[in-house]
Image (cartoon, rainbow over the protein chains, first blue to last red):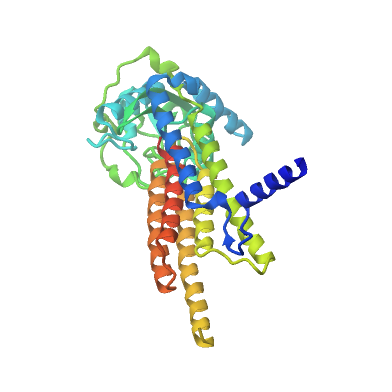
Length: 338
Length: 91
């Protein structure tokens, strides 16, 4: 009796995951891939999406809370530079103020870009904070759950990585702020790099440009550092910011923004609520899509092995799109960088 | 089906699947390039899901095996792809 029950359960399980032929001679696909089963899998995503929304709006701390600070970003940046044999960047309060000013402006003007809709450039914020620079750069990140993920994302992007590992930069300032940007609540990270005028040795010749291929070939006249080699700052991750700058415009005229010193700019920080949501969502999606992909793959293998079964129509297409989804989830990162 | 028809069907099968997989590879490449912008990745996924549905509709019409149940299977899988993408990239 027990033996029969076990056989029944094994056969039942087998029918769930593999194509089979019933006693009546009719061929059946795995029940786990029936329309009803596919509909039930879809409900898992619907319920997860609704669940995340409810938890996020009512009790986001359930999904984790992480403190995310500018100091962590600076320390991780310097760690990456050390791993690549580069000297650490020194913290600069004016660059931190510039970064805080940029973050405030991004929230105020509601944009996600290196240049504001009203035409403010990153170096306007840097110069507005009183920082006299020879080189400057900017990295942006939003909606990440922790500092490590931000720095990893920048390191995985060639243009951001070149900013982090640029030997021309000597100082750094970072702002971390939370708010609503382009309709989404999240964390914004602004990382400003700079080399102060005093940080560059005097050039033997007057006003020679192009000290490095990474810098714009167009020199910018700078009254405060007249005899030295001066190059315009570069927002490296953005491939085409430099043509916007007029090489003939003196820097002083190009810096109308006055940023008030803010104590929060020194080590700004924010608390990320719902920090585990991304990893939970990724696990649910990857697990379930892998399961469906696995069942389709089993069906192909079994049909190839057993000549009396037929391949379901469209299965190669299904495998293709499911593989694409798995690829996208595998490479998914929680936020965005610019 | 005679020999010529079988040959033709096989040719259509190969061309159709090459078209689909080319689109999927292009989509995967675009997703990889946009991996630091989740909104863009989801937009690409939506385009691919729509392409997959249109492809399925056209392919099975050409093969004369288009059935409502089969099309629903395509719809369900496209929705699963979008649902999985939604909770990862958007929610």
